[in-house]
Structures are given as C-alpha cells and as structure tokens.
Length: 345
Image (cartoon, rainbow, N blue to C red; front, side, top):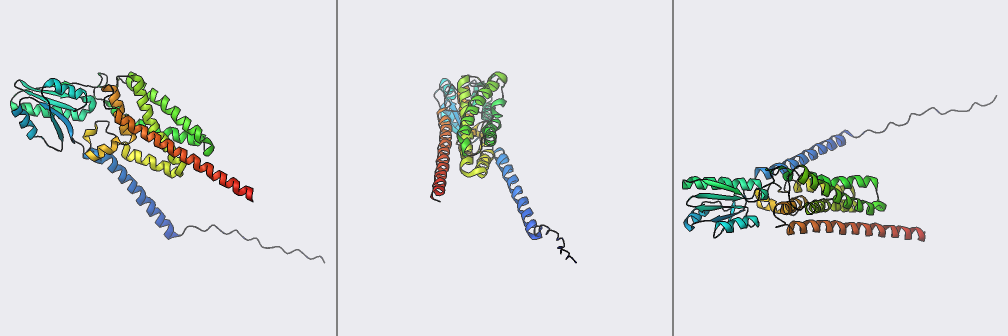
C-alpha cells in the first residue's frame, strides 16, 4: 500500500507586531508638543515685531531759532529720535533727499514746516508729521507738511513695495524645490544652479515690470530695479540650493525656516526704523530686508544708500556659490574613493 505523503498543517503567518502602547503615546505626545512649539515660534516671529513697533532711533532733522530748537529737542524721547540740527530749511530738505534723515521740522514764527519722505518709511513719516502738528499746537501756530520723496501717485501708501517681501521669499524657494525634483542628485547640480540663476533673472524682470508698470508702485531705472530684485532672489535660492546639496532636506528646511521666521517679519519694508534697533539691524543683514532696501534706494533715491544692501546680497550669493563648490568637490571625492575601493577588490 503506497505511503501517503505527510502534509504540514498550514501555519498562519505571524501578524505584524503592533507598536507598543507606551511608545505610541510618547511619539504622539512629542509630535503634539513639537508642533505646538513651532506654532508659538511662528506667532512670536510675526507678532513681536508689530507689538514692539514704533519709532526707534529715527533720524530727525531740526532747524529754526536756537531757543525753539532746544525746546523741541529737549522734549523728544532719546530712544525714539536721533536729532541733527541744520542751519536752514534748505539744508534740512537736502538732508532728507540724501537720506541723512528720514524727515524734519523747520521751526519759524509763521508756523512749523514738516519735511517727510514717505518712500523712506511711511510709518516714520506719519510719526514725524504728528510730531510737527503737536509742536505747532504748542506754539499756537499751524503745521505745513511737505512730502519730499513720496511714493508714486498710483500707490501713495507704498502697498506694492511693502507686500513684496513674501513673494520675494517664495521666489527663492520655488525654483529650488522644482529643480530638485527635475534634476536630482549630484549629476543635476550644475543644471540646478543654472536654473535658479536663470529663474532669478527672468522672475526679477517680471516682478519689476508688474510693480512699476502694472501697479505703479515704483519709479526710477527699471532695469536697475529688475537687477536688484533678481539679485535678491539669487541671494535666497543659491544658498538654499547649497544647503540642500550639503545637508539634504534638513539643510534646505532649516534655511527656509530661518528666512520665513526671521527674514520675512524683520525685512522692514514698511521702514526699518519702525522695528526695535537690534532686530532692524538683523533684518537688514538677511536677503529679504536687504532686497527691500536696495529696491527702495534705486526706485526713490537715485541709488543713494544702495551700496550696503547690494553688498549684503552679493555676499549671500557668493557664500551660496562657495558652499555649492564644497558640495561638488565633496561628492566627487567620495565617488573617487568608492571607485578606488572597487578597483582594489
């Protein structure tokens, strides 16, 4: 009688072990606490500059009879105003045009003439106007306001310039993210670099055209404004690209977070003198703030004051290029070592 083959009973595959309850609870708690911390950081980054806003060492010019000037100067808050006395109203007006001061008061027997430059910062200009009105009221006279450097008539409040910080930041992020997907890895590094440079030039030219000819928010040398905006985008996108090449997604995310949490709210596009002094200085060292100052100088002050922000943006761009070179050399060296190891085997 033939032996019947023995069959093994089917064994059900082991069910995947589920996560331990304590580990799951700890991970969930960590995620919740971490996201809450990120939310609070975002709240502080965007709210604190506004809560602590106000005149901070605003350059103010005064001219007029010495007793009147001394009386006004003695009543000013030293933390809010940095006062310079000028011999006459013409010198004061010239100082406003040269950006030596943001505005000033010309005191006279017939009243107070208030010189402002709303294009240098509308909030500071409004504060100087209010100061002039209050000074005239104490003297029992009237105040006349002259906006020496105004915004264009199509955008008298400078809304286009003020709103430009966030699109500029997005213009530094978008090409990096898109080109990383299209040209990944070390082989696509040079194409990514060429892509962000080309995007910066095209996008800067397009944004300048919309702001100047579409919205009427800017006037001045169009091509210089376009180059300034292009340099601002390149000063963001090239360092972002370098951080990703060196440290991966973590490096890119950290760079974007710093610019969103610090660069955007501290850009000072409404006027850097309206931020606390230390924060205002930090904002001008970051690409969004430097870009805004560069465009403001070119569009409204014939380039006066453009040197420092242009240098700042150039240094950010150069730093990004150097980091990209380091990433390229590091990857090439690693590949040579791997090829040598394979050849030895």
